[in-house]
Image (tube, rainbow, N blue to C red):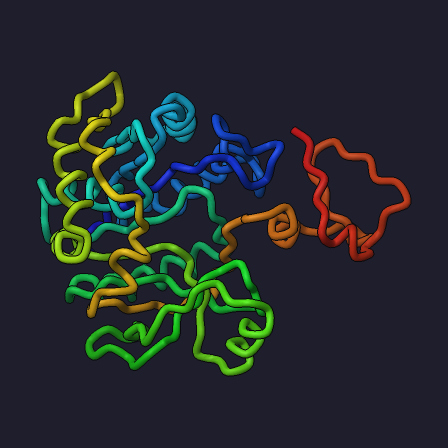
Length: 317
Protein backbone atom coordinates (compact mmCIF):
# COMPACT_ATOMS: atom_id res chain seq x y z
CA UNK A 1 0.00 0.00 0.00
CA UNK A 2 1.43 3.43 -0.92
CA UNK A 3 2.32 5.45 2.12
CA UNK A 4 0.33 8.55 3.03
CA UNK A 5 2.07 11.76 4.04
CA UNK A 6 0.52 13.15 7.26
CA UNK A 7 0.39 16.94 7.41
CA UNK A 8 -0.33 18.00 10.99
CA UNK A 9 -1.54 21.57 11.40
CA UNK A 10 -0.43 22.80 14.81
CA UNK A 11 -1.40 26.44 14.89
CA UNK A 12 -3.94 27.60 17.41
CA UNK A 13 -4.23 30.75 19.46
CA UNK A 14 -5.09 29.14 22.80
CA UNK A 15 -8.53 30.74 23.08
CA UNK A 16 -10.38 27.54 23.98
CA UNK A 17 -9.95 25.63 27.25
CA UNK A 18 -8.62 28.70 29.00
CA UNK A 19 -6.90 29.01 31.45
CA UNK A 20 -4.91 25.84 30.73
CA UNK A 21 -4.76 26.66 27.03
CA UNK A 22 -3.25 30.02 26.13
CA UNK A 23 -1.54 31.73 23.22
CA UNK A 24 1.96 30.39 23.88
CA UNK A 25 0.71 26.97 24.98
CA UNK A 26 -2.53 26.02 23.15
CA UNK A 27 -4.47 22.86 23.89
CA UNK A 28 -2.61 20.50 21.52
CA UNK A 29 0.35 20.64 23.91
CA UNK A 30 -1.70 19.50 26.91
CA UNK A 31 -2.26 15.89 28.15
CA UNK A 32 -6.04 16.21 28.30
CA UNK A 33 -7.31 12.76 27.32
CA UNK A 34 -4.36 10.53 28.28
CA UNK A 35 -0.82 10.72 29.60
CA UNK A 36 0.24 12.02 26.17
CA UNK A 37 -0.58 15.43 24.79
CA UNK A 38 -3.16 15.88 22.04
CA UNK A 39 -0.33 16.53 19.57
CA UNK A 40 1.44 13.34 20.61
CA UNK A 41 -1.76 11.32 20.32
CA UNK A 42 -2.30 12.78 16.84
CA UNK A 43 1.22 11.81 15.80
CA UNK A 44 0.73 8.30 17.19
CA UNK A 45 -2.39 7.84 15.07
CA UNK A 46 -0.36 8.38 11.92
CA UNK A 47 2.81 6.54 12.95
CA UNK A 48 2.03 3.15 11.34
CA UNK A 49 4.92 2.85 8.89
CA UNK A 50 2.91 0.50 6.69
CA UNK A 51 0.47 3.32 5.96
CA UNK A 52 2.21 6.58 6.71
CA UNK A 53 5.41 8.39 5.92
CA UNK A 54 7.07 10.62 8.50
CA UNK A 55 4.81 13.49 9.54
CA UNK A 56 5.18 17.04 8.32
CA UNK A 57 4.31 19.53 11.06
CA UNK A 58 3.31 23.12 10.33
CA UNK A 59 3.30 25.24 13.46
CA UNK A 60 3.50 28.73 14.87
CA UNK A 61 7.07 29.97 15.07
CA UNK A 62 6.65 30.62 18.80
CA UNK A 63 5.72 26.98 19.45
CA UNK A 64 8.68 25.41 17.65
CA UNK A 65 10.62 24.14 20.64
CA UNK A 66 7.52 22.64 22.28
CA UNK A 67 6.71 20.76 19.07
CA UNK A 68 10.30 19.55 18.74
CA UNK A 69 10.41 18.43 22.37
CA UNK A 70 7.14 16.50 22.11
CA UNK A 71 8.30 14.74 18.94
CA UNK A 72 11.57 13.78 20.63
CA UNK A 73 9.65 12.30 23.57
CA UNK A 74 7.98 9.94 21.09
CA UNK A 75 11.26 9.22 19.30
CA UNK A 76 9.63 10.42 16.08
CA UNK A 77 11.72 12.13 13.42
CA UNK A 78 9.46 14.33 11.28
CA UNK A 79 9.80 14.94 7.59
CA UNK A 80 9.94 18.63 8.49
CA UNK A 81 8.80 21.15 11.06
CA UNK A 82 7.69 24.18 9.06
CA UNK A 83 7.46 27.47 10.95
CA UNK A 84 4.79 30.04 10.21
CA UNK A 85 5.99 33.54 11.21
CA UNK A 86 2.43 34.77 10.66
CA UNK A 87 -0.89 32.89 10.63
CA UNK A 88 -2.69 32.74 7.29
CA UNK A 89 -5.22 29.97 8.02
CA UNK A 90 -5.16 26.49 6.51
CA UNK A 91 -5.24 27.08 2.74
CA UNK A 92 -1.74 28.56 2.67
CA UNK A 93 -0.44 25.86 5.02
CA UNK A 94 -1.86 23.09 2.82
CA UNK A 95 -0.36 24.66 -0.31
CA UNK A 96 3.07 24.81 1.31
CA UNK A 97 2.87 21.21 2.51
CA UNK A 98 1.67 19.98 -0.89
CA UNK A 99 4.53 21.73 -2.70
CA UNK A 100 7.09 20.30 -0.29
CA UNK A 101 5.80 16.77 -0.79
CA UNK A 102 5.28 17.18 -4.54
CA UNK A 103 9.01 17.84 -4.91
CA UNK A 104 9.46 14.15 -4.04
CA UNK A 105 6.31 12.74 -5.61
CA UNK A 106 3.39 14.73 -7.03
CA UNK A 107 1.27 11.56 -6.99
CA UNK A 108 1.68 11.22 -3.22
CA UNK A 109 -1.39 11.61 -1.02
CA UNK A 110 -1.45 14.12 1.83
CA UNK A 111 -3.55 13.53 4.90
CA UNK A 112 -4.22 16.94 6.43
CA UNK A 113 -5.36 16.87 10.05
CA UNK A 114 -5.52 19.19 13.07
CA UNK A 115 -3.18 18.51 15.97
CA UNK A 116 -5.76 18.94 18.73
CA UNK A 117 -8.56 16.44 18.03
CA UNK A 118 -9.36 13.11 19.66
CA UNK A 119 -10.07 9.80 17.90
CA UNK A 120 -11.21 7.08 20.30
CA UNK A 121 -11.32 4.14 17.84
CA UNK A 122 -8.03 4.28 15.93
CA UNK A 123 -8.63 0.93 14.21
CA UNK A 124 -11.89 2.18 12.71
CA UNK A 125 -10.14 5.41 11.77
CA UNK A 126 -7.47 3.47 9.86
CA UNK A 127 -10.14 1.40 8.10
CA UNK A 128 -11.71 4.62 6.85
CA UNK A 129 -8.27 5.82 5.76
CA UNK A 130 -7.73 2.70 3.64
CA UNK A 131 -11.06 3.23 1.87
CA UNK A 132 -10.45 6.93 1.34
CA UNK A 133 -7.03 6.31 -0.20
CA UNK A 134 -8.52 4.64 -3.28
CA UNK A 135 -10.70 7.66 -3.94
CA UNK A 136 -7.83 10.12 -3.37
CA UNK A 137 -5.62 8.24 -5.81
CA UNK A 138 -8.41 8.58 -8.38
CA UNK A 139 -8.33 12.38 -7.99
CA UNK A 140 -11.01 12.93 -5.35
CA UNK A 141 -10.50 15.28 -2.40
CA UNK A 142 -11.82 13.24 0.50
CA UNK A 143 -13.21 14.75 3.69
CA UNK A 144 -13.64 12.63 6.81
CA UNK A 145 -17.27 12.87 7.92
CA UNK A 146 -18.11 11.91 11.49
CA UNK A 147 -21.39 10.20 12.26
CA UNK A 148 -23.36 12.70 14.38
CA UNK A 149 -24.50 11.60 17.83
CA UNK A 150 -26.45 14.72 18.84
CA UNK A 151 -27.84 17.93 17.28
CA UNK A 152 -24.54 19.78 17.58
CA UNK A 153 -24.46 23.49 16.72
CA UNK A 154 -20.69 23.88 17.00
CA UNK A 155 -19.75 21.86 13.91
CA UNK A 156 -20.26 22.27 10.18
CA UNK A 157 -22.15 19.47 8.41
CA UNK A 158 -21.69 17.57 5.15
CA UNK A 159 -24.58 16.19 3.11
CA UNK A 160 -23.60 12.75 1.84
CA UNK A 161 -24.34 12.25 -1.88
CA UNK A 162 -24.10 9.32 -4.28
CA UNK A 163 -21.58 6.50 -3.88
CA UNK A 164 -18.42 6.77 -5.96
CA UNK A 165 -17.65 4.13 -8.57
CA UNK A 166 -14.52 2.16 -7.77
CA UNK A 167 -14.21 3.50 -4.22
CA UNK A 168 -16.46 1.46 -1.89
CA UNK A 169 -17.60 3.38 1.19
CA UNK A 170 -16.81 6.81 -0.26
CA UNK A 171 -19.47 9.25 -1.46
CA UNK A 172 -19.64 12.47 -3.41
CA UNK A 173 -20.39 15.52 -1.28
CA UNK A 174 -23.77 16.98 -2.10
CA UNK A 175 -23.25 20.15 -0.08
CA UNK A 176 -21.59 21.72 2.93
CA UNK A 177 -23.69 23.32 5.66
CA UNK A 178 -22.41 26.03 7.98
CA UNK A 179 -22.79 25.63 11.73
CA UNK A 180 -26.57 25.43 12.23
CA UNK A 181 -28.77 26.74 15.02
CA UNK A 182 -30.33 24.21 17.42
CA UNK A 183 -33.56 23.78 15.43
CA UNK A 184 -31.71 23.21 12.15
CA UNK A 185 -29.23 20.83 13.78
CA UNK A 186 -32.08 18.70 15.13
CA UNK A 187 -33.71 18.66 11.69
CA UNK A 188 -30.46 17.46 10.08
CA UNK A 189 -30.09 14.70 12.64
CA UNK A 190 -33.70 13.59 12.19
CA UNK A 191 -33.50 13.62 8.39
CA UNK A 192 -30.28 11.60 8.28
CA UNK A 193 -27.62 11.55 5.59
CA UNK A 194 -25.62 14.34 7.25
CA UNK A 195 -22.17 14.08 8.82
CA UNK A 196 -20.08 16.35 11.01
CA UNK A 197 -17.17 17.86 9.14
CA UNK A 198 -14.13 16.62 11.05
CA UNK A 199 -11.71 19.02 9.33
CA UNK A 200 -9.50 16.18 8.04
CA UNK A 201 -8.77 15.71 4.33
CA UNK A 202 -6.97 13.24 2.08
CA UNK A 203 -5.91 14.22 -1.45
CA UNK A 204 -3.06 13.94 -3.92
CA UNK A 205 -0.43 16.66 -3.83
CA UNK A 206 -0.90 17.51 -7.50
CA UNK A 207 -4.69 17.69 -7.13
CA UNK A 208 -4.74 20.10 -4.20
CA UNK A 209 -2.03 22.28 -5.76
CA UNK A 210 -4.11 22.57 -8.94
CA UNK A 211 -7.29 23.32 -6.99
CA UNK A 212 -5.67 26.04 -4.86
CA UNK A 213 -4.18 27.62 -7.99
CA UNK A 214 -7.63 27.60 -9.58
CA UNK A 215 -9.73 28.89 -6.68
CA UNK A 216 -7.18 30.78 -4.58
CA UNK A 217 -4.47 32.04 -6.94
CA UNK A 218 -3.25 34.72 -4.52
CA UNK A 219 -2.80 32.10 -1.80
CA UNK A 220 -0.96 29.82 -4.22
CA UNK A 221 1.45 32.56 -5.32
CA UNK A 222 2.22 33.83 -1.83
CA UNK A 223 2.63 30.35 -0.35
CA UNK A 224 4.95 29.32 -3.18
CA UNK A 225 7.12 32.38 -2.66
CA UNK A 226 7.17 31.90 1.12
CA UNK A 227 8.45 28.36 0.59
CA UNK A 228 10.97 29.34 -2.08
CA UNK A 229 12.45 31.93 0.29
CA UNK A 230 12.31 29.69 3.37
CA UNK A 231 15.54 29.18 5.30
CA UNK A 232 16.65 26.26 7.49
CA UNK A 233 16.98 27.06 11.19
CA UNK A 234 18.27 24.23 13.42
CA UNK A 235 15.66 21.45 13.05
CA UNK A 236 13.14 23.76 11.42
CA UNK A 237 12.24 25.33 8.08
CA UNK A 238 11.36 28.98 8.53
CA UNK A 239 8.97 30.45 5.96
CA UNK A 240 9.50 33.94 4.61
CA UNK A 241 7.31 36.34 6.57
CA UNK A 242 6.93 39.06 3.95
CA UNK A 243 5.89 36.61 1.24
CA UNK A 244 3.49 34.73 3.50
CA UNK A 245 1.84 37.95 4.64
CA UNK A 246 0.63 38.48 1.07
CA UNK A 247 -1.58 35.37 1.26
CA UNK A 248 -5.27 36.01 2.01
CA UNK A 249 -6.29 34.35 5.28
CA UNK A 250 -8.78 31.65 4.31
CA UNK A 251 -9.34 28.01 5.22
CA UNK A 252 -9.00 25.09 2.83
CA UNK A 253 -12.62 24.28 3.70
CA UNK A 254 -14.12 27.56 2.51
CA UNK A 255 -11.57 28.31 -0.18
CA UNK A 256 -11.41 24.95 -1.96
CA UNK A 257 -13.46 22.07 -0.53
CA UNK A 258 -16.77 23.94 -0.75
CA UNK A 259 -16.06 24.97 -4.36
CA UNK A 260 -14.31 22.04 -6.00
CA UNK A 261 -16.15 19.54 -8.21
CA UNK A 262 -13.98 16.76 -6.78
CA UNK A 263 -15.18 16.79 -3.16
CA UNK A 264 -15.95 13.43 -1.57
CA UNK A 265 -16.56 12.14 1.95
CA UNK A 266 -15.80 8.96 3.87
CA UNK A 267 -18.27 8.44 6.73
CA UNK A 268 -16.86 7.04 9.96
CA UNK A 269 -17.89 6.63 13.58
CA UNK A 270 -14.43 6.53 15.11
CA UNK A 271 -15.23 8.45 18.30
CA UNK A 272 -14.11 11.89 17.15
CA UNK A 273 -14.11 15.16 19.09
CA UNK A 274 -12.41 18.49 18.46
CA UNK A 275 -12.33 19.19 22.23
CA UNK A 276 -13.70 22.64 21.65
CA UNK A 277 -14.87 23.20 25.22
CA UNK A 278 -14.59 21.83 28.74
CA UNK A 279 -17.99 20.18 28.22
CA UNK A 280 -16.82 18.31 25.12
CA UNK A 281 -13.68 17.16 26.95
CA UNK A 282 -15.84 15.90 29.81
CA UNK A 283 -17.79 13.77 27.32
CA UNK A 284 -14.61 11.94 26.26
CA UNK A 285 -13.49 11.00 29.78
CA UNK A 286 -15.07 8.34 32.03
CA UNK A 287 -17.28 9.62 34.90
CA UNK A 288 -16.98 8.39 38.45
CA UNK A 289 -19.77 6.58 40.32
CA UNK A 290 -21.56 9.87 41.02
CA UNK A 291 -21.39 11.03 37.38
CA UNK A 292 -18.64 13.61 37.87
CA UNK A 293 -15.64 13.89 35.56
CA UNK A 294 -12.28 14.93 36.98
CA UNK A 295 -8.60 14.37 36.35
CA UNK A 296 -5.42 14.57 38.40
CA UNK A 297 -5.64 15.80 42.02
CA UNK A 298 -9.18 17.09 42.45
CA UNK A 299 -11.35 17.29 45.56
CA UNK A 300 -15.12 17.19 44.90
CA UNK A 301 -17.56 17.93 47.70
CA UNK A 302 -21.36 17.66 47.57
CA UNK A 303 -21.24 17.33 43.78
CA UNK A 304 -23.07 14.80 41.65
CA UNK A 305 -24.37 14.46 38.12
CA UNK A 306 -26.61 17.52 38.06
CA UNK A 307 -26.76 19.98 35.14
CA UNK A 308 -23.83 22.07 36.33
CA UNK A 309 -21.67 19.00 36.94
CA UNK A 310 -22.34 17.63 33.48
CA UNK A 311 -21.22 20.90 31.90
CA UNK A 312 -18.11 21.35 34.01
CA UNK A 313 -14.72 19.68 34.15
CA UNK A 314 -12.17 20.24 36.87
CA UNK A 315 -8.74 19.63 35.47
CA UNK A 316 -5.59 20.29 37.49
CA UNK A 317 -2.08 19.92 36.18
